[in-house]
Image 1 (tube, rainbow, N blue to C red):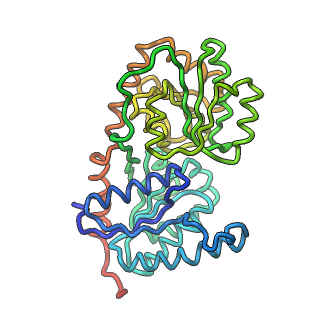
Image 2 (image 1 turned 90 degrees about the horizontal axis):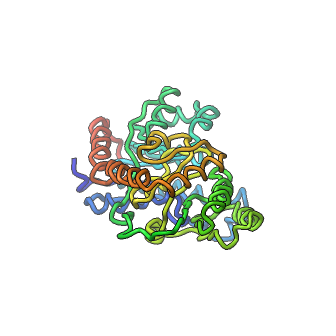
Image 3 (image 1 turned 180 degrees about the horizontal axis):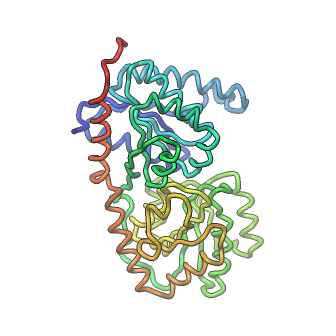
Length: 366
């Protein structure tokens, strides 16, 4: 199936902020349009209008929800199908579920693309309401075998359609810089992503490599705490808080990195790991959630337990002292990310769209 002539209602967040799902939504819209599809974007994180409404907790929900429902209704009238980017918690209840039900009312088939490392806990709490909405969707796709297993345990079959990484943007540096040990973390500054362990790992690494540095690219509620911790650990001059970077700046940061760290406590298919691999940077990640479904320990990356700065530091030091291991991981990582290019993923997505449209019953008049 070609995407040419297809009209897709794409429901999801867009940057800013440039988080994983927002970046994937924007990238999918660009790729579908480049493949000659029409994309009707319904943004779930659109700015509040008027801006002051965003400062009032209850009122802001209404100011966002009502325009969102109207945009869903209009997009459904123009679309052959809906592709809904879904996540756990309130994001599901406020955005994904309404999109499914509005499309159902309009006779438009829905592909739900669920992504979120905390899906297990969410489904334990909310499986009945999630199932009620999913029964109205045509297909559930997930980016990893991890989520496929979780939904399967709750009686909801899913098909794996991986995330997409842009290898034109994320590519290896032309030549590494010798004698340097620059670590990079690209996660939001939230407790879930445990940037604290990355800071403590750097402190340990610097006992053997005093020149080692760390750049943390992201924003979030722990910003001040983490800066204070860096000062307490006497790392002020060794840590750079870069804030949130756009994709081109993030790609440039990876090309200047020697090791990419992913210290998260829960995860599904982190784009930061894929982008590190695509940039020819060895990855040290916690062995949580969907990460071991993406990469194998000592084959594509080094995996360590969560909340273990000592083991994370040991993995970094191992890479710095074993060039053969580092090169082996880099080569295997570059080969592995070929599975996540648009050329590899597009046929899978096209097959999903084809099956959904082929099974569609006649739609009511719009």
